Amino acid sequence: MVPLRALWLAWALLGVARACPEPCACVDKYAHQFADCAYKELREVPEGLPANVTTLSLSANKITVLRRGAFADVTQVTSLWLAHNEVRTVEPGALAVLSQLKNLDLSHNLISSFPWSDLRNLSALQLLKMNHNRLGSLPRDALGALPDLRSLRINNNRLRTLAPGTFDALSALSHLQLYHNPFHCSCSLLWLQAWAASTRVSLPEPDSIACASPPALQGVPVHRLPALSCVPPSVRLSAEPPPEAPGSPLPAGLALMLHCVAEGHPTPRLQWQLQIPGGTIAPTPTPAPAWPAPPANPRFLALTNGSLLVPLLSAKEAGVYTCRAHNELGANSTSLRVAVAAAGPPKHAPGSGEDSEGQAPTSERKSTAKGRGNSVLPSKPEGKIKAWGMLEETAEGRSPQDPPIGILCVISCWFDCFVILPGVYTRSLLFLGAFNSGMQGAKPRGIGEAGNEWGGFAAGWVSAD
Ligand SMILES: *[C@@H]1O[C@H](CO)[C@@H](O)[C@H](O)[C@H]1NC(C)=O
Ligand SMILES: *[C@@H]1O[C@H](CO)[C@@H](O)[C@H](O)[C@H]1NC(C)=O
Ligand SMILES: *[C@@H]1O[C@H](CO)[C@@H](O)[C@H](O)[C@H]1NC(C)=O
Ligand SMILES: *[C@@H]1O[C@H](CO)[C@@H](O)[C@H](O)[C@H]1NC(C)=O
Image 1 (cartoon, helix red, strand yellow):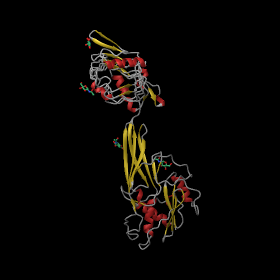
Image 2: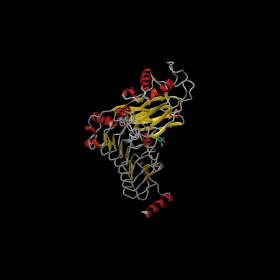
Image 3: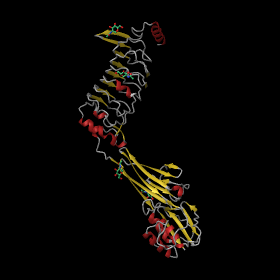
Image 4: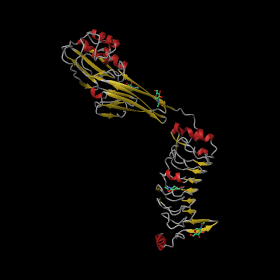
């Protein structure tokens, strides 16, 4: 091979080359100039081809790259045969110069990415063979400007999907080979089923235009796809405890749980995005921890079921909490602003009826008062006072000259907090989720009941004088 190539190079240098490169046979026939360079073990497109060559066969060689400029001197080519090579790389611009090209055969190569924009210049193209390559995608507008394209062969590639309308602009198309691609049959490919059913384009081997995934549809021909349920996502957000009014602040020290519920089909994926002081964070969803094993104390805990737990709310956790859901049909998101009230003395006298920071609704206030009225731990479930009531209670139970509420939070085990409120002799216990049997002090019935009843991560306060 090397001597041949050297000979041909020498020939080119001698300037004789315009006739025909050495390994090729050039024939002038029926007013066409043929250059036949097939089966020559060529590794590059040869130089020195006749300038008026119209049919150039380079099939069955070992060409690996089509360089920009490789065809710059043969712009009269109408048929370019490059099948059965080892082409991996087609440099942008290499083919764009072939504005007379009608037939392009690049089949049986190793092409995984292709400079589709070059096709915009090939407006005379009638036959495009790209079958048996490694194409993983076909951009929506890749074939837009080919008004004369009659036959397109992209079978035996690695196409997983096709954008709706990919073939719409090909007004002359009559033959389309799509089979033997590993299509992922989901909502986004349903258009192909409808298009195949209505088009006049012939689609050979329809039973081999089939799904490779999802597993349930593997092997099912696209034209026999079952009806798929396709619904874009919608998102609902709720807070626990719920804010009294949108944007009203929550007391610091609280455990906040946000529930994000997304509907849609396929099942949407959820992602939290928290815009908090110091930046935006996107906690990775993890499965709910197995109780009672406590994980390391997290600042945020996003669960795979869509809930987000903020174990200990402070001003640093105030911000905008966004839950975004997406599936292949689209995305949707909902945000909630979490405001946190500074933990400080109340500005109003107890019992004034108005309060600046205790944001609990009246109903909560009542249950708070009721809970406080018991001098022992409440024994009925109604005695469980939501965290909302906490600030309310302290506000009512404190005189204005009391020092600021000191919240001493001893994490005795995960999320169990002991809160000591000076001057009130109120011990409060924040419990979260399944009740922990290791809890200090007398084990009140009420807590255990409430813990079971609330299950999971529900937060609550139980207080005793
Ligand atoms: C191509 O050019 C060669 C001379 O360079 C000439 O002999 C031949 O007739 C031309 N062929 C066509 C089809 O124009
Ligand atoms: C595209 O074709 C036009 C003529 O139709 C030509 O002038 C232009 O140079 C070509 N573009 C490229 C990148 O070769
Ligand atoms: C997002 O979901 C809401 C309903 O929750 C719906 O009204 C809205 O149209 C959806 N937006 C998009 C872009 O799908
Ligand atoms: C997610 O799981 C947690 C703990 O198992 C539970 O408290 C919460 O309610 C769940 N969220 C949803 C939206 O089901």
